[in-house]
Image (cartoon, rainbow, N blue to C red):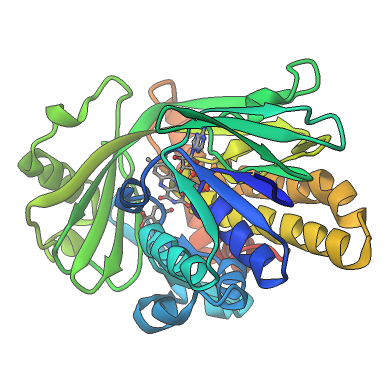
Length: 389
Ligand code: FAS
Ligand code: PHB
């Protein structure tokens, strides 16, 4: 089999890249390890930056989002009992879209089906070959049979645990990592959201987040030690801890119910450089991971896809490869900005075991500055809604 761009991984990055390329006549084949149902069962991101919304509109995958998504022009951060609202519209004239990653993935699959795109699910033993030559290829197994996919380029969209990043020689890769000493226990419940906007809570007991997917589907998180396991947390224990970390007057409005999904995600910051090596281009979580505090993971995948799809389209349409040559540097410039924001909000909002009383005062003062200083509000808002591509 032969194609122009082989895409490893059919998550949001792989699907969006395939869609934007196919729309412009660039051939792709998406190789995905899991089944479509499995990919659609994942509960992950919930907030889309304006750039991501624009890209999904360009990709012809935005109708359901524009109908069911919820535009938000602000969010709350709390410090113990104090509620601080950041007004995105007032601070920077923009907003975000609250719409689950699961639904984005569903919309992208529908758009790809509409174009008759080639997705191969259930692949195993994917290996990238000759990425330093002009004739790279991918081998993989499917239902016990060996296959070979010839291509011009390979897009590694296979997430943090995929094979693409590791296909770049260790001597070439420069990696940066910060592991946070806690995780997020997340719960999805078919209950009305606590508040009409997101609430990020800094409390002595730990961080909490009240989010949502729609008027009858809520998404909540509490910070937990890395040693905790999901089975350690009953629904009642979760609701009680979440309630304890929110301002009392707000917590009184919490509607609880059975969890329909419950999971713990560790938090890390990670970047690999470069994001290109020969014919291989890394995209999304394959190249970088952010703590979900700043709602940047999915949105960084989108901006990577924007730069990479523009590069491929110019290459094939106008034999202009400058976009491909500039990809890594351009994508990384935005990645590091998002890394800083995600790290800063994570540091401001979480309870760190090693923090002293002085550190906790710094968190408090950071939040008070956000409450009273329009410049601080603007910096937070511009980063939260998404810096320009
Ligand atoms: P993904 O990991 O989504 O997709 C990679 C795909 O590649 C997967 O479908 C995988 O099955 C496939 N794959 C892997 N190895 C392969 C191989 N060898 N061969 C073929 N296919 C292979 N971001 C936020 O903004 N907010 C959040 O709240 C948030 N919560 C998260 C919770 C969890 C538990 C996790 C893990 C991530 C969360 N993220 C969040 C980040 C998440 O949304 C990612 O940024 C987003 O999924 C990135 O998309 P992709 O780069 O496509 O990677
Ligand atoms: C979510 O709704 O899952 C969500 C929202 C904002 C975040 C992280 C997760 O920063």
